[in-house]
Amino acid sequence: MLVVNLQKKWHSFQLDAAFKISTGEVTVLFGPSGAGKSSILRFVSGLSTADNGSIQNGNDVWFDKQNNINLPPQYRSVGFVFQDYALFPHLTVEKNVLYGAKKRHEGDKVKDLLALVGLSGYEHYYPSQLSGGQKQRVALIRALAREPDILLMDEPLSAVDWQTRRQLQDDLKRILRQLKVTTLYVTHDIPETYKMADNVVVIHSGSVIKQGTPEEVFLGKRLSTRIQLAGKVVGTEHDTIMTIVTVLHAEQYFKTLIDTEEVQRLNLKIGDDVIIGAKSSDVVLFKPL
Ligand SMILES: Nc1ncnc2c1ncn2[C@@H]1O[C@H](COP(=O)(O)OP(=O)(O)OP(=O)(O)O)[C@@H](O)[C@H]1O
Image 1 (cartoon, rainbow, N blue to C red):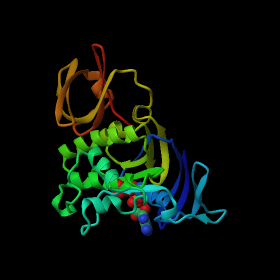
Image 2 (tube, protein in one colour):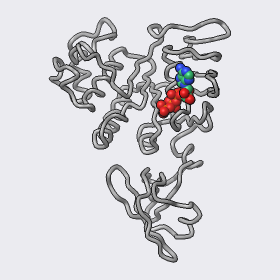
Image 3 (spheres, rainbow, N blue to C red):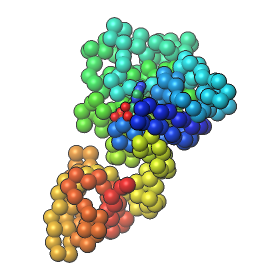
Image 4 (cartoon, rainbow, N blue to C red):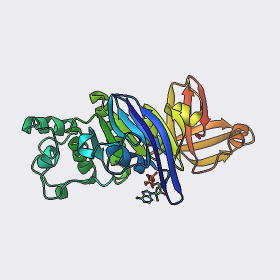
């Protein structure tokens, strides 16, 4: 378990955040732009230093201001995946993956990792010969090759197109679950959070305002529905009693029939993020947060 407790002040921005990341799970750090998400990743990795607080990975103390402990990044077992891939342009895929990897990783290990992300045979390509999605797959396995205790991912899919993003979400989820990688994943996208997260830490203006499963933090309760789809409202057709609400989820449109009174109670508008839940024949609609 990673236990994080950090304070930092920059001019008018104040960060004061404490949370825990369970081993083998994906914790999503969710919040609007400027909330402090990327800063937290930098403090955890050691690329930046907080004013106060502590970071403890199991029994290892990475940072403890009071006791003057601040391990440099190379002594913290972290892998980092950035939004802009940050691959070395002059190195092949194989050399990028081997860079910083544990010594015993040789050619076979690279082959295994490339197979894991569907890039077998790309060892000798250069980053400029890859698509955005392929570059991000290489960035992922480069981080995994270090066998980090904690994988840090900062909006890793925001630079790729929608279809690639969906495919990469599926692949990432499968790989992180399969390898049981303890991951801290930053995004401000609700559907992506639903897809990726075991746990969510919601951060707002430098403070943790909620923590729990996606259902707990977005809906405030545990849902017993069998199906849950997170999407955006793209249309409403009102009748006096019922309203047809059209929701866009992963490039597909879903039409749901909702009680008009419920639509008014939720103050449902086009562009709202919603979650559709379905239990046998009942369809329910929720507005997260
Ligand atoms: N080195 C710095 N010096 C001064 N202010 C900083 C520094 N780094 C971050 N900040 C401030 O801290 C706040 C949080 O920034 P941060 O990048 O962590 O937010 P974020 O939640 O990751 O946002 P986004 O989703 O837009 O990337 C912002 O107000 C930013 O201006």
